[in-house]
Length: 198
Image (cartoon, rainbow, N blue to C red; front, side, top):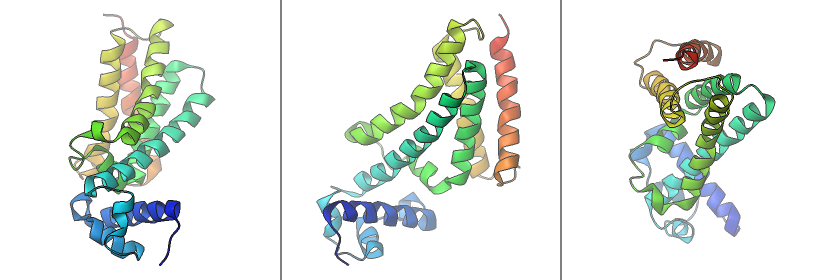
């Protein structure tokens, strides 16, 4: 199959995501992605220097998609405490609805993320939402404690819950409403603690 320049990159990323979904991140090869996209084994090298670069593109798109969702959440809410909660719920929802991509985003298959500026930038954009919401809540006196620590604590909760669900360690339905209810309840408990003065 013949692709124009931009279409080939798109086709390879789509093929890579399909393979990761079927085989896991370790099952992806450039040759396999080329075969799935219907192009020659050498075609991926026009866009990706190696397998890690292709995985980084998959991860970058995942972060960009999550960031877009968090853009909508943040824009809809003026209350920063509610924003913190809804960002957390959206994060867990994304993880459970995009399992393969989420594993690439946070897996060990991309050891040096600094080699991939697009990935670094999309991840930074994603996490800036939580940073800003907590900084805003702290500035208004709605939460107490060191903002950086609160950000790490909040991320640890939602990332840990997401990982437990994906690994089958948390008995939560894979259906989004149940997952979201659990995420919201845990988020409320966390926020109750963040509101309390030492």
